[in-house]
Image (cartoon, rainbow, N blue to C red):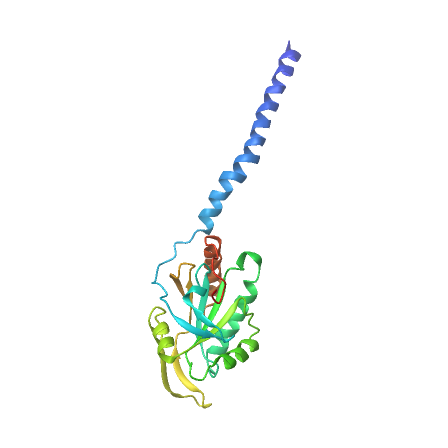
Length: 225
């Protein structure tokens, strides 16, 4: 009798174990892990305003408008080619971000540098500067244009500064401008401001940009069109 009871109990245990295996194999990957991942990777980013319509020129000599940013998370900075203080550092860090955001999942993330010395920084001058930092035109563009148009964009929605305050010891113009990076989403909303001097903040910005890339669909060619 003992042998019969024991043998009749084994299939039940096997069935229970089998159901447990099926539960782990099906429910965990399809429900539990995605839920956990969403909690880990979802960011409540602020809405700091909208980038309005604008028309500038890039280092390729092409017209560059706000349409070029639509559908693409974009990291924006402010530099000028004659700067001998923070600009080379900012551009070097942007170049590093270009490298770190070169994988397929980050393909839609774009980089834009706006010159705060537009009278001097013509497209050919910006093209030489872009080459110095090995900027890839399909990823990173440099913008210039009429002074009033640039100033309106920099000091308006981007909440920066663009003010000539004499010259530096080296003879370069001393232009007060923002040392921050701005993150713009695919709907032209400004979603974050990050101090270029704080490397942990820049890592955070790239995580935020990747999050936006996962939740947006590129609909415009970078550079317009």
